[in-house]
Image (cartoon, rainbow, N blue to C red):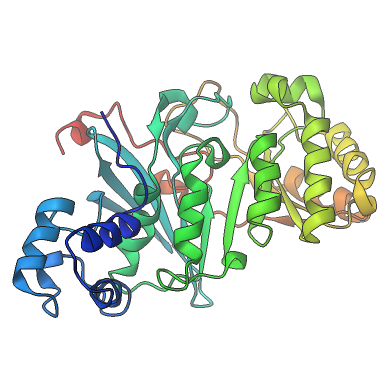
Length: 353
């Protein structure tokens, strides 16, 4: 299967130029999408009928390159299953906070091949990287329905920094003529892909960066997250220190609490030592503690987190001078929480969609 090269906005612009249409036609198309929230080329009535028909033939009837198959709803959370080319599927999560703002958790890969033992997505393996359009269309789907784009996180299916198309997607999302989002409203999570962390430092210094740590001990982290053998913890921390030096931006540390595995007092103390020993004594690192979410399917199963253990872990880090918060949980009942996105590839009811 051959995937389209370059984002659709660049391809549409090149198509118009090839057919000798004036520059203002592109402006009309972008205005229709991002101001009038029009999804289908044939509904952009400001364009000549012949051009509308040509665009529909060349790019498809819908502006979107992905198709929603079904939605699941929970309190404050909507999860959408999309079909992408090749008859594969991905999931996207929309969170609505009581303060009134909305956040979106997008996927960057169809599946994942890094095999973290606590994650359902990794158990299906990597089907393929998503294109820039398939990434940004997850946001466009909601935007065309009138949702507010308050914040976006690349924390859905896949490892964002293992897909080079993520950088083009960031360009699209922050382009003033397209989505026009501030990079400070975007977050990217990584398990520690050092070359791409360095690329982010140079090309996307204002985008928030989150490092999925999950154990401060090298050997244990390798067992939980095999990527640690390729990009060892201390090498990743050096790259994060350099990111902080260059950008002066805070780096977030994601830490999923696995009961009896990585939530012991020795882990708390070692995590504090690890961060306090970094650049500026760790003052620009911020730990997010995440309660373990039971998964539909993952290589290993763990018990649910003890609230007392989570609070003790939090208090110990805080008393050590580490900036720390306990992340709120959303969407567990519809498998939309951290580590649960799976797409239900093995479920017959989805195979029929």
